[in-house]
Image (cartoon, rainbow, N blue to C red):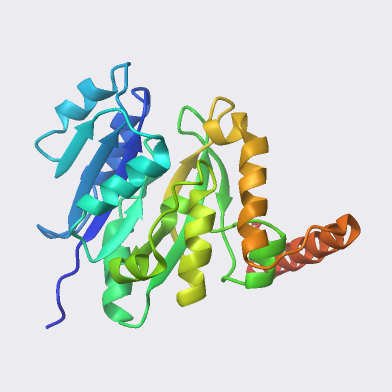
Length: 261
């Protein structure tokens, strides 16, 4: 009999009372999971809205939670993963959702593929009210496309083994917005991620989001990540050409897979 695995999901939060109830509901309504297979850790940065009140309503279900000032989302995630006891790790922002079947499918994938270290599924973009905007069906991981187009791995639909996270050195506090891209790159250098063609998450998209308001900072961090991986930005024409090639490859690949249907 194969060993029962545990998935630890860290939920970083700050003043997201409008959404965090739905986020926690998506975790606590997971189908077909056995006791001990899911660990939920909520790391709140000292919210001043009704977030903590909502967290307390779920207190009997949450494995660990804390509300205290932190140094930002990356700091909260690092602290949360340090508390985690699961074999598999992932995080869910407090305005995103998991599909009801995600935890079961993720654990089953890791059990079936003992050599799998890093998996990602597909996701659906939703608006502020939760209405689907578009389905984000992705392609298998390709370094050239990832480096020269963008980090197309849907963050809430990505999961990895604890040992890989530790070997890669964990999250880097120097990144405020692109911490997922930096982590994914370091994980992928050790074990290229495998794409699972299943809808695993719902990403909320709305104008007030931090990554939309601070796009300039996010772009700067993305550039730092790629420069560390050997990408040169000295020649703007070459940068544009590489982007166009990568974008064309990605769109063509998605068309071939029927991802835009």
